[in-house]
Image 1 (cartoon, helix red, strand yellow):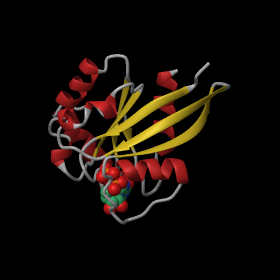
Image 2 (image 1 turned 180 degrees about the vertical axis):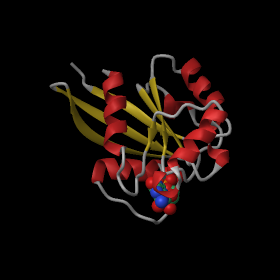
Image 3 (image 1 turned 30 degrees about the vertical axis):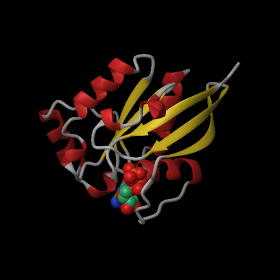
Image 4 (image 1 turned 120 degrees about the vertical axis):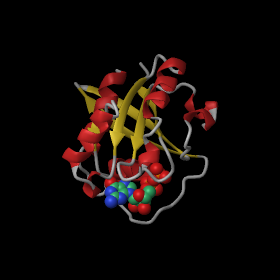
Length: 161
Ligand code: GDP
């Protein structure tokens, strides 16, 4: 049985996709902003309910519009992690449309949404503003502190098996 699954992180430039992957795979964080060009692929094995699952994690370059992402990067994806930055509204102003696009075009894939950089915001206030915009976010994580990072990758793993 092939227990490896492709997971792709999507979202705008600078929302912290690479940082989340780095925190999850290497348990480190850096304040330096190193732009991902093209795609960076990492592997990590996790254990879910007695099952070993290899996550093939695609950290692709950020785009302000999901339709601009090369379809070849998205092909064969089992799980999407859509990342937003709570300190920059433009990273989630089209959130619902972007999610609909993924769900329509990659209907077999699981999708979870993550608001990163939780260390920089007042969580209650931000959650209230999302509610008003009718945006539903699954995880409020921080690659910097490590908060919720392990959980979000395990959740996408669980959904994919
Ligand atoms: P990407 O373009 O989406 O891959 O974003 P990066 O991972 O390169 O992060 C962009 C910038 O945000 C970098 O300067 C990171 O140090 C910073 N950053 C990423 N995650 C966090 C976080 O959880 N908290 C804070 N305070 N900064 C973060």
